[in-house]
Length: 326
Ligand SMILES: NC(=O)C1=CN([C@@H]2O[C@H](COP(=O)(O)OP(=O)(O)OC[C@H]3O[C@@H](n4cnc5c(N)ncnc54)[C@H](OP(=O)(O)O)[C@@H]3O)[C@@H](O)[C@H]2O)C=CC1
Ligand SMILES: CC(=O)N[C@@H](CCC(=O)OP(=O)(O)O)C(=O)O
Image 1 (cartoon, rainbow, N blue to C red):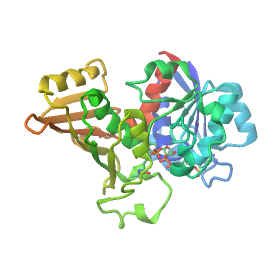
Image 2 (image 1 turned 30 degrees about the vertical axis):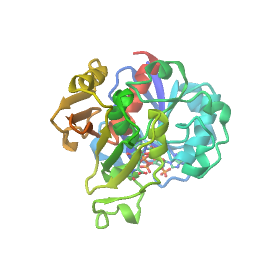
Image 3 (image 1 turned 120 degrees about the horizontal axis):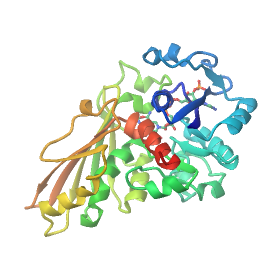
Image 4 (image 1 turned 90 degrees about the horizontal axis):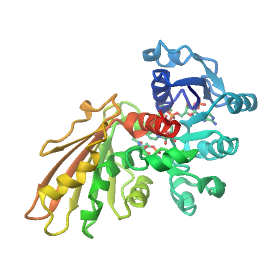
């Protein structure tokens, strides 16, 4: 039995992973934490999320005493906190010897020069960063098992990389074009005007400047054009991706490439059938559907995940299972 502390447990991804850890017989929740001055400190999680009425724990402030208790009692810590908060907490818990599963982007780039540009801070912990591994569970299991600093991928990169990585040896110099739509939970729980009910209407955002573009590029090893969109639904991501494949590529080559997922129970691949967001919401699954035009060499592949599950919490749980080997 491994004991896990969850920091940022009142947020969307934090509450989601709390419910997954609560349901896992190999794990026990050490505690649920929010910031020291949180308006929610002391409240039962179930007061915020009545769906989780079966979970009895309350939200504790992350005081110095609480941090010391976590170090004493927990084997691992999940950080479901903003990038700038995770930056410091991850380093501190890692240095205390705990396994860290960080849902933020604070440890996803190994190159420290990326952080000022994409996250607005200098990375103060290059030594800790040198231990960080990218927690794309189907691809990096060996590294996840070996490292105590796991940077769980972003939601759009998870959807995009799951579709594109099998094709990497087949791509031409024509840049893959990724158009992805996310539900509003992708923006987190805190109130913001642009994510309030009356304001949300399908629109692109972060055009040619979203931080997930360099994350995808780094992990794919190839430039891409990435355009995220905000949709008027709660959860889920659909990424529709157009790529050109090398001359002479056949459908059999594409099938062989996607056969990499034959032993991946959470990934489903279909030819000439396209996924729906509703089929993956509230599940840890990724559904891929592709169609190829041999005349032009263009392939369209669509990838559907739940942003809070495969895009965050359930992928973190995959990493926990891989790391703790159960
Ligand atoms: N939403 C999504 O689909 C995805 C999110 N992510 C990433 O996961 C992380 C969490 O996202 P999300 O759940 O959406 O965010 P939310 O805004 O919903 O939740 C953030 C949580 O962090 C807590 N918190 C804030 N400051 C501190 C602090 N100093 N110490 C401890 N807890 C703190 C908040 O509570 P309080 O303020 O009351 O203290 C709240 O519980 C982010 O880095 C995000 O980028 C990654 C993939 C997908
Ligand atoms: C709809 C929406 O706003 N989505 C978020 C992505 C959420 C995510 O994956 O989080 P990371 O920041 O941890 O990468 C965004 O575009 O910023």
